[in-house]
Image 1 (tube, rainbow, N blue to C red):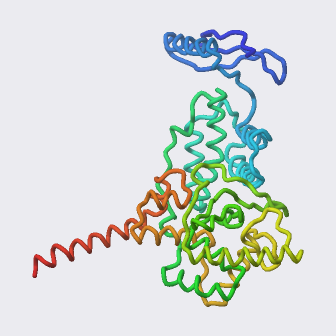
Image 2 (cartoon, rainbow, N blue to C red):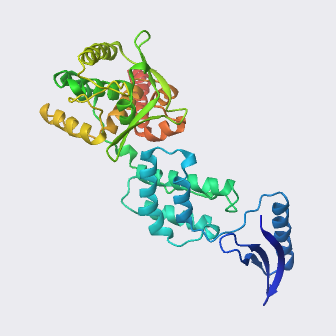
Image 3 (cartoon, rainbow, N blue to C red):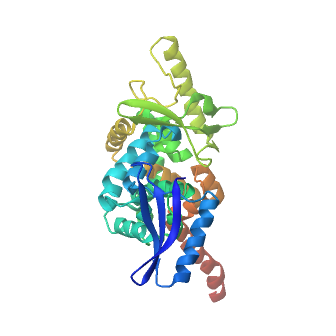
Length: 378
């Protein structure tokens, strides 16, 4: 660290703690105030803290880098091996939200209040809560690293309070009867039969459905090993391993689904023998042209299917919510539901499906009333 000295300078009625260092970008000696105090003893206290952090190699020389620049630097670091999808989303977040709010804000000048103001601003927009959380996941990661490397003085995300707002409870999901109709009718629309069963009976995410490999299907024990995501970016497909422990999981599925998978496996093997199928990634789910699914092509097929069976449209991801809600309403314990969905923390499951739990609580109240109060009155 190119720190020349740190000292107290009195200016007017204030005592300033000043750091003198060599700017690595310009090669020139610079000074930067670390704090201004009315009382000299307060300045001396900070001086001791800074000297101690310097001696313990925990003090980072300030730079002129902006928070926006630091965000780009974090996500475009090839050593981190981010997936193409993560990079694309991160750069969009920085471009559309971080840059527009922070602009030329220096990283070293970023405070808890600045970041809290940013979050409060996001919650006043029409953005979905899930979108806001994705934005914050991206920026929090940058700030955590900045604190670890002592580029900022505080781990800013630790001091943030999220405004209370949730649009999760208003999620639109299929009823049990609607889900039953979909599973029944999709036999007449073969390319969607297995994907729809994976969503409604397995609770898979779209990328997990598209990235399910034959090697991860355990026919003997009726288990699917969820290990991969198939992602589509700029005309290319990438098979990526799930990175979090929660997302990598084994789930048991109904025999009916396994029978469909066995039938599809036989079909694909025959096509390979006839040189009619090239499946380099060895994925389970293919479209009508024996190609991989991407979100756009699947959505078109999904909407066409719903129109044919006269069924209302809900988002593909909501099929997963339907699966989870039905599990909860069938009295499946929350830990099992959380593990089945691949959530890293049971609190995530509790927060997302709190509306289902409220329904169950209401039903429980009505049931206990019928058992106790009605008998008493009789």
